[in-house]
Each structure stands twice: as structure tokens, then as C-alpha cells.
Image (cartoon, helix red, strand yellow):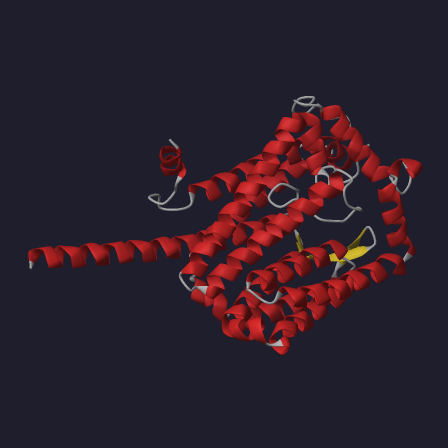
Length: 394
């Protein structure tokens, strides 16, 4: 019985990983629907058109899918060769945003390009993953054996972290740092080294948390948002009210009360709270399961590549899966009050062109690794059948 279901759910005989495509397409569609619902009132207030943000988000979705299809055609070997150049591109973007970036809510994170803005940290995140996957392929034995090879990536990470602090974008720092640590861990580096590095990272994070009064205020308001619910704890309390209203099945699509100017950033950082209010616990858990499916399939593809000895492809898949997992977890944890407020979008769901484009490119990379693996398996199968046929004729 179990074997029968396993055969039915398997994508081995399919041209691509259908489960990965299903999770991605579902999240994109749900995101478009929820952005339309969550942004209608604020769009009406700002522009007079309730579908202003919905139309823009739809354009972003279509454009992101097209960019993803283009990225799908790029061979992995070419991505690997571009690794050092992409790392430089990420640094240049993070420097450029400090000088020509548009300031929003006290942070310079967006480079204005006329009709749209590019979030530098989103592009830099992808650049760093590609570079680091290439680094692990070239120096994997040394990373497992030598302190120097293990610590060199932290120098590169340190440059990114310093530039992100100047924006500031602490959410991106957590995601990028967690991704790199995860990739190092999955490369087989000794665990005791991670213990030492983790102590230093936690100490540095603690210092950054108390270095500025507004950061300390965020932590204290996170611990008890109801103590100052109309000031520092306002966003979190409104998000928690949205979750409380949702119950099991929600208030119904479009019936959110919190999006009526109560919950700030309802269509961007806190879209998950509106989703929980309108679709309830069932809808919220379904979205979490879709993210889990996407991450699981990404790691599974990476594991297949690793077993074949494709180190770059494997760590590229691991890094992408870790970024999706970390960013989704942090966004949902912030909305539910498990973590202090961070300015992170929910991948594939939240409003924002940069996040959508980069997310679709990362999914395309996963699909490219899967496609090259399937092509290799088909070639091996054909060669094996040809050999068996030749032996049979003899």
C-alpha cells in the first residue's frame, strides 16, 4: 500500500519536479489574491483605484515568471563561472543604495529605476548564494579540514553585513548569515567550529540589539506588545488581533477588518496576518505546508546532486532552500509575535517586485538542477539499455 502511494506521488517519470512547480504556482496565485484583498483600502486612499497595487503586483508576477523562464535556460556551469562577478555585483549594489537609494521609514534599501525600485539586498542575497556554492565546490576538502578555508567566507559575509548595517536591513543580515552558516554546516565542516562561531555571532547580535535605542525598544515591545499597544507595540498587537479574528475558517476573502488602516504594511510585511484573518487557521497552515513542500523539494534536489558529486548544484539548492525557509519563518514568526519586528517580505506572497523576481529566479535554478539531473539519468538509462541490448544480440 505504501509503495503504491509512493509510486503515485513520485515525479521520477515526469519531465520536471511537479511538486516544486505546484508549490511555487500556488504561492504566487495565493499571494496575488491576498495582495489584492489586503491593499484595496490603502490603494483607494492613495490613488483612488482599489486595484492599483493588485495590478502592479500582477505585472510583477508575470515579469518574474518570464525572468524565471529565462534563468531556467542558463546552464549551471555558466552560473558557476559567474560566481565571483555576481559577488562583486552584490557589493556594488549595496554600496550604490547608500548613495542613490530611496529612503523609506528611515532605511535606504531601494534603488529607484523610474517605474520600479530594486531592493539591493534581495539581489545581493542571490549573488552571495551563487558565489558561496562555487566556493564550496572549489575548496570543499579544505573547508572540512582547515580553519583558514572555513573562515574565509566570513570575511566576505562581513563586508555584506557592514553594508547592510548602514542601510539598515537587519532582517537581510539574519537571512544571509543563517543561509551561509547552514551551507557550511551541510558541507560537513566540524560541528565544534560552529559552536565557537555561533558564540561570536550571538555576542555580536546582542551588541547590535542594544546599541541603538530603537532596536532595544523593538525587543522590549516584542516581549510585551500590549504594554504600549498604541506606540511601539502597535504593529504586533494589530497582527495578533487579525489572527484572533480568523479562528478556524476565517472571516472570508475580502472581509478583513485589520486591513482597514489598522494594520500597517498589510500587503507587504504583514500579508500573512491578513491571510490568517480572512482564511483562518486552515488557510494559514496550508500556506505553511506549501512553503514546507517547496523547501523539502529543493533540499531533495540538492541531495540528489550531492550524491552524483555535483557540489556546486547541491550547495546552490541547499542555499536557496535555506533562504526560502529562513525568510518565510522569520516573516511568519514576526506576524505571530514569536520574533521582534523585521522588515522582511514573505517570499512569493508579499507585494514587491524585487522579492518576486529573485524568488522566481531561485526556483528556476532549482528546476534547472532538477532538469540536468533528469537528463543525466535518462542518458544513463539509454546507455544501459543499449548495452544490455548489445549483450543480448551477442
